[in-house]
Image (cartoon, rainbow, N blue to C red):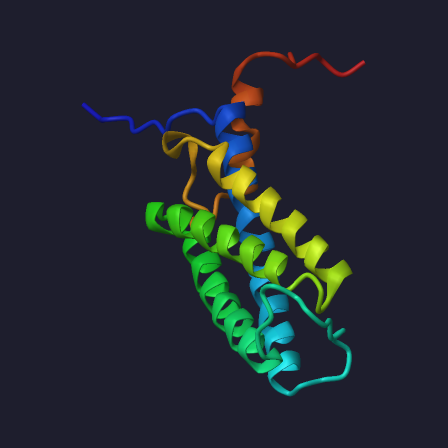
Length: 165
């Protein structure tokens, strides 16, 4: 007697969950990378930043640079964990995206347009990580052959084989 091992069928909900997590991982990686670059620019005291007088949350530009550099480095590390669908990475990803939103809001007068873009991207990351239930995820580090993705449609009998005409 032989045992047949069947894999659970892929559902649309699982595909959406996996896609949203992939989206969040890639976007968090990009946000982290761009935050690293922004931090390096601020540490180098580049002249592209606007200086504003009498700003309530005024820090030294080098201080903002170190904050963005640290947040960016952690965001890149967490995005790698998201690709492995680790629960710690989802929780930390929401926290880091929230901190990125706060840091970009506080540094809004120094680089206004880019801060708004980073706030919007981080908002999408938080949404994508919070909209997915843990049980609906595939491990993104596993490589699935293309024939397995198409398999449920072929077995459902939606397309019948017809004899050649």
